[in-house]
Amino acid sequence: MAWTKKQLLLALVMVATGSINTLSTKWADLQTSENRQGHEVAFKHPFFQATGMFVGETMCMLAFFIQRAVVRHRSRNSMELSSDSLRTEDFPPFIFYIPAICDMTATSLMYIGLNLTFASSFQMLRGAVIVFTGLLSVAFLGRRLRYFHWIGIFTVLLGLIIVGLSDFLISDSGDNTDINGIITGDLLIVIAQVVTATQMVVEEKFLYKYNIPPLLAVGWEGLFGFLTLSILLIPMYYIPIGTFSGNERGVMEDAIDAFVQLGNNGLLLMAFLLNVFSIAFFNFAGVSVTKELSATTRMVLDSIRTLVVWIFSLVFKWEHFQYLQPVGFLVLVVGMMMYNDVIILPVLRRRGIVKDAPADPPPAPVFQAAQKRTQPPGQDVVDNNSRVDPF
Image (cartoon, rainbow, N blue to C red; front, side, top):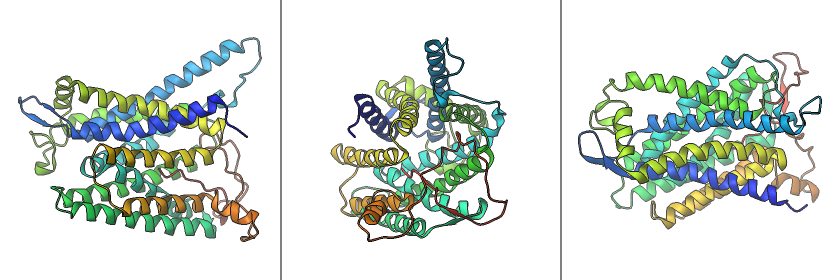
């Protein structure tokens, strides 16, 4: 069935804003601006940038309430809302605090890593979340993964090794690149995926019983993340970390200096604002794509934006072509498809090559799931529904 104009627009917005999110952050990292000391220096403020990301997530809450108000206005003569995605039930908002802390930690680590490595590698290495989510779901959710999940996990691991090796070869080409910095950045991004996977497991374990619209959930996590990180910026202003710091004062983060640099460079300010607003629109478009099309479509579109980031980085010479990168990307995509049981295995089943039972349709998103588990606690469960969007 052909897509409608609305669905095409949502897909385009998701790919565009998802790509802009990574590219605008890297663009800001590559710019220089006059700091408080009057020196022209690079913009190295990953924690400050992470705070901006949480502002974008918080805007999703505003989008939710505006959307709900519009729907209520249109259906004011009806006894109930016309959209299930806008119905809410009472829930304690602080259940989002632990996921928000995980999000804050992972985002900060990834932004530090992005500052050190390439934008395309940043996007591809985030695929490691599949590996850690699968392993943690076995350990803490009592799941037993099926064979295609394990094939997907090992395929993703192979893709990550190839991408990491491509970064090593690029940095070893004698092109004034910092090989230690690139490797450190890649490792930080992978470590951040452990925290992101922990966030996913925590959300599923503790938020499973609540019926919470995804946009509202993202908004609450953004709000808690913004408030917490904003408070932490105060001690960070005084904590010395020496040469590991990207600012002249040698402290963990200098938020005042970040504001000064933003005020002294219009393009830098534009890059920062693009990051904030792209986060908000990306989350909104992603939720809408899942609702209007499918979670599988959202996953494919996520892969496309990874490709967009890589091509953009090459065109604007942020990095040089390395043949292993597209190879690693393809391996990661294959691993993602195997893990989520989409495209590859369904085609093989239709042709009679694979005769196993397919995975059940994916469950409702964690924040929308209101069903209760039918298995007793601690009983092994075959995870037919495990799905992770890696990019």
